Length: 328
Ligand code: UDP
Ligand code: MN
Image (cartoon, rainbow, N blue to C red; front, side, top):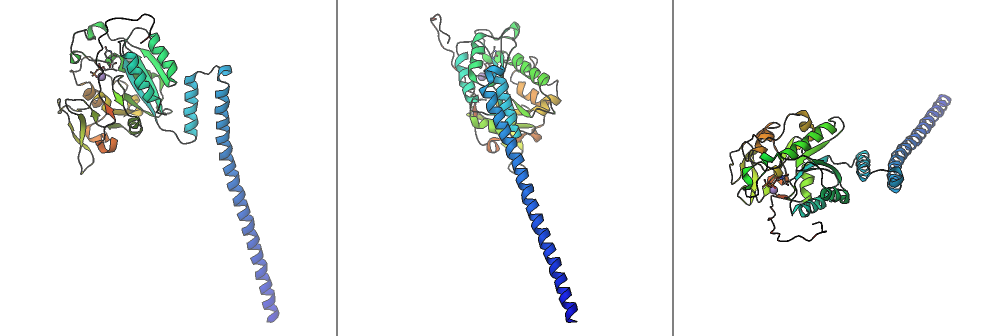
């Protein structure tokens, strides 16, 4: 009996040892596996960092343009999972005394936004040197285009602003470029119409990046009030109407600077564009109707309680003389 018990105990000890050994092996292997995985991730990041540094150091020899480097940088951020969707900011612009000042102001705002692709469209037959120089000095990712407003649609010197549609040709040219060059399977982003004379907070771009379909927010200094703003139903959290001093009953009483549309939607509705045929002041409403309903709008900027963009207008300067050789 005792003999049997001793054998039994020894057998149990033996099994116990085996299990312990197995556990030690298993633990060892698990630790090795974790170290191996970590080293893979680590080298991946290091490899990308190295690749990026090498590209920047050798950009002259590689003949890489600044635009290509910015794109590589964006891809790199995407790989690291830090990416924000790209904001495609479409800006109509035209030659006048204040143009360089306006473009300097907004390009320097955009320089503070990491995930922006500026689609800058000149109202002219050809791209001008003034804008070309500004673009190349900006260090931004820019697509520079030209699309001239037909003469009969152009505002006369003494016409009041509301008499003609402004920016139609240029915004449509921007949309055309976006639709021809971006792929819904590869490119993720949001499209925003960014007039050259407004004032934009950097905070606005963080809001735009959140847009799933169509996002809206208040715009300061427009529509005859201190701000035009969507009204949010506290129960449903949805947009129930609009506060505006001018035709608040429009289907979407929202300024051009008060909404952004996901790139996927822009690409899915290739015929949606702006038109001279639209009633004055109805460009935004008619364009938005292609994509969404009031019920689906996504209220942003802290539930439409914050103003991050202002519809500022620059006074036309009185210029009585020109200093030759000075680009202003
Ligand atoms: N714009 C243009 N060509 C023109 C007039 C305006 O390209 O003949 C552009 C302008 O630079 C701006 C946008 O269209 O980015 C809207 O014009 P504006 O600011 O004059 O319109 P408002 O703010 O009064 O609606
Ligand atoms: Mn304006």
